[in-house]
Length: 254
Length: 254
Image (cartoon, chains in turn green, brown):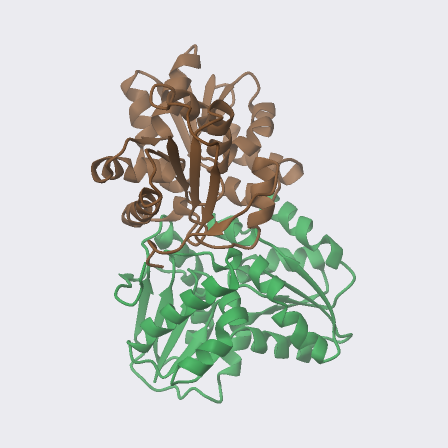
């Protein structure tokens, strides 16, 4: 079985890592759209167009199942992808929401993500439908912090305080609604104290269990649309090792 | 006379502002590639491809002269643009360098910019050719800080300290090698003390004087490749007013 995963850039490698840890034998093809990252500041139409191009690239690689690792793409493009692709398509939002609802005790849940993800209202809607009280906040500096490798230290703590101070004491569960954020999980837990922090990458890999047959040759192919400046550093930061990277060509009109 | 200006996003509006202040009558067409911003993290090949598309878009608008407001595009694509366009093309790097050399007393000059700009070595090479001692530093968090509207305050000061602490006492002149950075100029001056801070946007508008005839109808057209999430806010932050914005279509393959 071949699983396709795409993300706006490198953040989705946290999802890849969680999926590989759970399914050792499947073949995986990953596409990071580093030529156009970040999606989180772009308009809905543009996110949909980019997402379709990514999905079509992976479709040509013969995947059996697609995971949209990017929260922004999941928020804006999931329905369209489900309609247009001839294989199952999964986003990261629903699994994160289900996991949060399982873990919360008082149904007071926070959600953080990019501007686009938070503005889409998709998380908030799903949570409110289940009777949760929801606090949300866009945290645009978290992605550049992680991409700088600043996953701890004084600046990171100040930025976390800046965004999350209004959450303190008001929620018992927080969803990390962006694939970059798991790298800040420890510092976020330290700041918020006694809050369950939900990592979507774990949630999505768990939720695939009914659909994935763990059969294959354990291959892993990594494609990116641009050899961006710090690509090797970031792949190493997230996966803990350097891997062969290929330039994705063909489907993209860029 | 019609001047074309392009930038990876909104930062180049600082250049537009400086040009308009100096030349009241010329017609100006601005293009911000907000669908693919930021250029500063991308590879050389990708920056060149994107820059050619932007220049061709403005060429179709009938411009007489092109200003590449983006430092990253100036660093990687200027020569190629000069070869391929049939009108004069100016980048922001040379004017900034000349202004710095005019203002420095001890020829100890600092240059800050995006990862791509600093890595290109273009600033360093031009300065060293003139016998300057050069310190350089990539400051990837400055752009997202500005785009968040965080142009002052505790986090901004911490980030400035993080990047510029090694410059203290070692230079007498600093070039802001990115069009977003003029918005941080005051805080940078406060931190470095007694350092001449060179704003490329002023330098480029000054350096055009031999080429611009200040004639025209004072029109201003703003095009962007995406109505990105905080576009209106940023246009207002930089230009001090809200203006009509048009979506750029046609030339782009995205």
